[in-house]
Image (cartoon, rainbow, N blue to C red):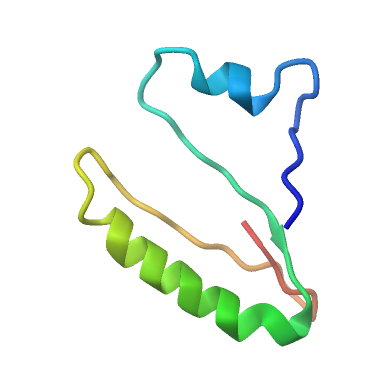
Length: 72
């Protein structure tokens, strides 16, 4: 896994330190095709966990079209 900041001038560590809400988290996952089913299962398990957390509102998973298994 590679964690890369979208804005190197304002990395995630600095963003997390700010007291603000609500928070929207957006992740981009570019997978090897062989890992796609495992990824989907992990996302399903993660969503079930998050739905039980106080203050959680929703989660959505979007897949790119075509053969490239990129998710947002």
